[in-house]
Length: 113
Image (tube, rainbow, N blue to C red; front, side):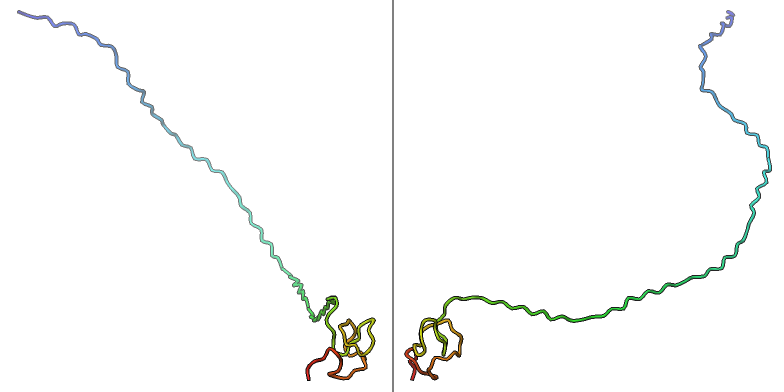
């Protein structure tokens, strides 16, 4: 038996991504660039200002003193108490070496012979 060919079936088309082709064309254009040069000769003069700072020194001695009042104290050899006459030799606030009329190692307050 003889078979006739069957008609071809057509399937839906498969669309692939577009292939992009780029063609570059070049043209050479000459642009002249001029770079002029100028030389300036500069003569430098420098003034050097020299500063000096001479120093002198001196010494100062500073002395201070203080006076402290310690109140009444026991008698000082040869001192005279206010209100007491010479020869009593009691405690006083007089000046050391003031006259009491007694010589060294004399008086009622001395006990050391």
